[in-house]
Image (cartoon, rainbow, N blue to C red):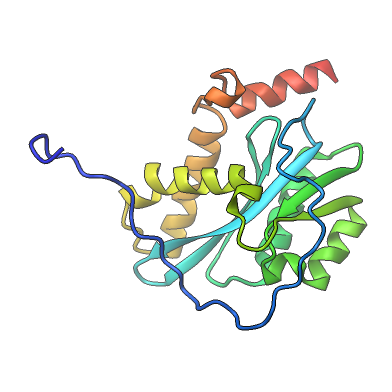
Length: 203
């Protein structure tokens, strides 16, 4: 790699805040690492990651993925990591997908996802909430894998000067590349958009 002038895109994981000393309450893990599906809008997963912006410091991307298509169906980018960012991402996903039946949403035990406001939204939308076990990233591996891919293919390749620049770049990556052009081995080397369209035709 040195001879060819190649460098890895992997960077040391940044933790912008220290772990809370408060005991995290375990909640029901409905999904239990069963990522199998028969069609879209059966199982969704969600998580938050960090993206650095030169003028704004660390900003936050909340994403929602459909496990059947691997498509990012909802997301929200913000300067603050509040409950509002995850509710916006979920509302975005719900309005885009318009699911016709009850589904499962799996997240970690972060305070945004365990908040009463978020739980009230799930109840309103008839969504069953599922949680990862504390300290078990494999429970939500699919969405964490997406965020790792986004960073390696987009965020680590660019220095974002402004929040708006980062917001536009993330939109172009997710909607223009990841969902519609990037093929995935786990879904038969098709794009997430293709899988969703095939599922809607069958339905």
